[in-house]
Length: 533
Ligand code: GLC
Image (cartoon, rainbow, N blue to C red; front, side, top):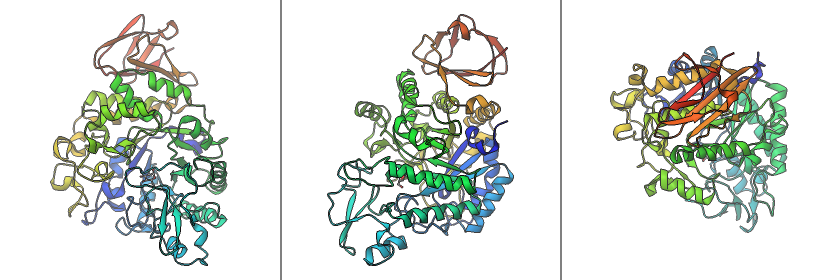
């Protein structure tokens, strides 16, 4: 049996924008009560842990990633008591809840920043990074390229520039100030005491700034994150920290430390390569990045994803690959944003059921614990008329009644239009249809959860003799899985090396068959096979 504190190593995660999920009081915005009503649904799907996007009070210039108060829940979502109740209800079902912890920056509306900018003698002056010139830290890149021209913004009140890695309305906290370091540990303690199961730590590479560096992944940053982890280990050993560091595998690796920094980290580089593989119908880019991925400590785990609330980021591919990805997946200019693509999974994959399932087969069988972005389990569409990343944050499509069963009031946002809108694509219809995408994903989750091999570390690529077929082994003890994914739109054959020519149990079909010599695979088919003795 696995140590129960390592629950995250074989868990299925689900990301939710609370505003978008379910409205319980008719104000047109999703809330915590609404989410609680839908725990049955998430349990049916087979989810182990929910990640809540920020629910803190916020002016919403960055959809809540601009926090104005770290110690409360925004009124529109409910109260702290509502959150406690939600956590209790989820725990009764064995479902955990983690939330965003935004360490790097606050909203410019936060009282700390208001005090900091207004009064040079304020104890909060030094909570932010002020400068008389905008010429410092020149080597730091700009992340929100479409909207920002500098990481410095002039503040009239302070008569100085302040530093920000994201929107100018999100001033960076000054982590060189021990007070700031302490504040953020207090914030973590507050939510952990309330019962939250951990944090998705937002934008962690950027906590510190140092001249003549690109101000990412600095040793000081790792040192602070280790302090945060030590604090959690001491008082809350079963809670987790999930790292958002959009970096190459070599640079993400240090965020696991010696098993004493993050429990989990998103695997950003594999994500675009799954889309590359589906389009090129070849697995080599995926294999190369996985081979480039260093092993991680035994108590750590990757988190794999196909989509999330942001753009499909192309920061972790070469400029040529990025250009190619834009050509393939963002044919209309408005589909692009910053260095990425602001579309959802189903439309990206032409709403092709086989490709969507295949992508999920990869998600659920590559090393790491998978996370599903709300709505992708039913193949929801996006709405490109909405600005920024809002087109992939539209209301959840529950049924085909007016307003999708999301609200009885006036919805905060437009819905998805057209064939991927709620009249065609909704939960109610798919739950009733044994052949729906929802039910396929539910089956994949159920099968995955029966086998610790999927949560184990490491994988072995199997030479299939066919560049169109991604074949690999996942193993736990003597439980060995052979996974075959035919990336091609045409039927393919593979000839496995002799050591894999064995008897297997097909984990979906439930029948046994012997692989000997040449094996034929249907277009875009996937097979999860358990080796038999
Ligand atoms: C993270 C979030 C993104 C947000 C940014 C700034 O990258 O995923 O949504 O805009 O941090 O907080």
